[in-house]
Image (cartoon, rainbow, N blue to C red; front, side):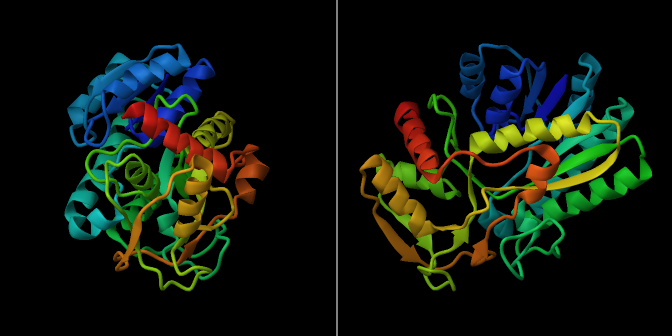
Length: 332
């Protein structure tokens, strides 16, 4: 069985669907701090399959032990964690405690129950302000915010642990910027409160839930002054986790690190204009001050994932913005 921590979240829920469609048996663990219980019904409806669910927190080690006692867990896909860059700057202690301590608890419980395979949800934030783009996996690592630092710390912990425990194998997936939703519109990015990420913010402005999109800075050294990112459809990203699990099913052990991105850079205004064109809706926006910790450009070289995993992003920017709006309309 495969355990997905944070499995009802945005990326986790889409990965659950792909795993269930493939016939895998899964256990979902989530504390519901930034997800909703209704995602369970939607995952079941899309995949036409069931799963086991635990409301639990990584900081509660005994609740983690209960999951491993009651299920034979063969591999863990570790999504659970706080993930807002801006919030991490304001609340760094919460991020270090939740993300780093939670992962340590998970690894210790995995060791107790002889579970030695993990796919870890990392982030392109570990590249800090990159010296060049596109970014390859062997580029220097640094961070510009506490959220990114927690991801980098966890990556180091996983690598040290893999050296010490020769049975342990881990795929570290460095995500770029997932957007979009499942084509059914049943699941998508649905954060509690005001969104931190661009696409749900745009969708809520389009639906009238929010008055105006705030664009953080238009004086970056980019083609239109707004920040450039590598946007990847969440379903493509979810499929990357299945490829990573397949990689871990092979005999060799160790640490395998992959960028998961489209390999193209789009600015904030590019995304706004693509959304307007695909969906026929005008988006009100205003330029505000830069956010602390944000960088100008960040996009991937995902060649390694293609060569070693047979994975590449297939969906277009039009798919991403259309599916995001479809989810917003159906969900609200």
